[in-house]
Length: 321
Image 1 (cartoon, rainbow, N blue to C red):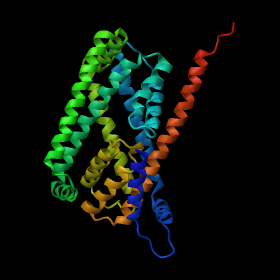
Image 2 (image 1 turned 120 degrees about the horizontal axis):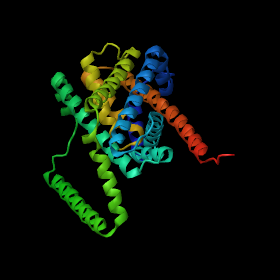
Image 3 (image 1 turned 30 degrees about the vertical axis):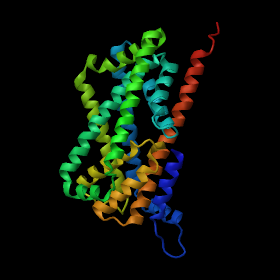
Image 4 (image 1 turned 135 degrees about the horizontal axis):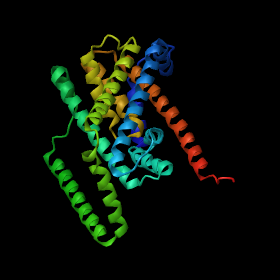
């Protein structure tokens, strides 16, 4: 994954052409210098607010399982999960459950079931946004999709589908065997199922939906604030922001650390192909934006990791009479 990430970053940087006597790092730094820092710090506020709401939504999902956790523990665990995702794609989903166990003794298999629900809701919302962007910007997106190369080798496609079917079937056989033979595995699966079904036992389903909408509305606001923070993109319309937001969300879903590489490839391509932003400006904008977003995650995750460590140490410390 690291090799792929580095290769994509290198290919993206190759697209920046600079004038004589100027290097690419200076060109990118000048893009940062031209940005409106007020909007970038407003973006930080939007990002952190969305994380707090997501942590509260996760806490709501855990309530029906009989696990009462604090918003603080949920938030700290969530931020640590984002930090781990930057190094190990999707590893954060497990690490945040483990951190919550350390803080609140919530069974990992149960909390992981609620995390799966959390991600399913995100996927459904993302699919809706992608569909909406296609409806609004159909002509542009159709032209963009036509520029991407996809293999039309029917035999190759069939081979991949057969391989996938064999892997799934083999996984099911192994899972059934262990469920019948291993009581511990069965207990874990039951706990996972309990977390997974928690969404159907929510006390306030309406509030859960409101939180879900608010999270993605703040994500969209974050994208909008970034667009107007840079001279290269501040002229773009709201529909353009929605389209680029959807492209960026797809890029971030790629199994690469922090979406690095995939984000730096797809989003500049969208800016150039759909909205005629100069290629060098588009690439520099994405590098600065992604670096800023990464810095926020790094700081938030490291601070949360330190606080969690201190809390766990404090809880384990013997009480002096």
